[in-house]
Image (cartoon, helix red, strand yellow):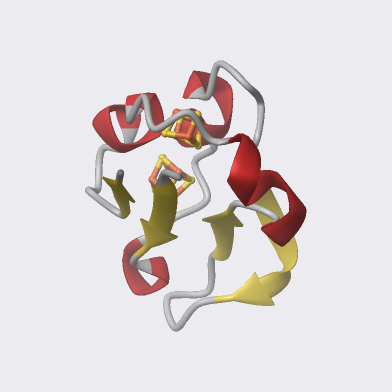
Length: 70
Ligand code: SF4
Ligand code: SF4
C-alpha cells in the first residue's frame, strides 16, 4: 500500500496537491497550524488505503512537502 507523508513544517496550504490528486484524497486541515502560521495539507486516515501511489501530489508541490512511498 502506498503511503503519503508530509513535512508539515514547510507546507503553506496552497492547495495544489489537493487539486492534483486524481482520487481527491487530500485536504487542507483547518484545525492545525504549523510554525509558519499556515494550515497543513494531509491525507485523512480513512483515505490512506485509497492512495494509488501515483505521486502526482508530490510532483505538484512547489515546496517538496510530500513524500510518497510504495
Ligand atoms: S502543494 Fe505542498 S505546500 Fe501546497 S498545500 Fe500541498 S503540501 Fe502544502
Ligand atoms: S500519491 Fe496519487 S493517489 Fe496518492 S494522495 Fe498523492 S496524488 Fe493522490
